[in-house]
Length: 81
Image (cartoon, rainbow, N blue to C red):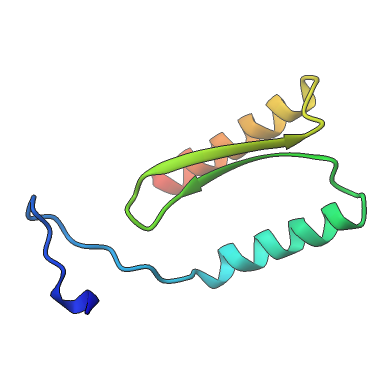
């Protein structure tokens, strides 16, 4: 049935499909959280329709998490070049 979907705006319709690397990274993070190794997280996500969102959970106080986000930001910018 999803083959019958057509965009109203003429853009490509994106189908839902899991990305193996994304799943692996999330599973590794979950295992570390369950083991008590990760106690706080900020997760930025791109959804199948190119919309974005984020989630925050656990202990995220302090400037260390901001530094980690800045490193991630730099890597994302570098990947887009």
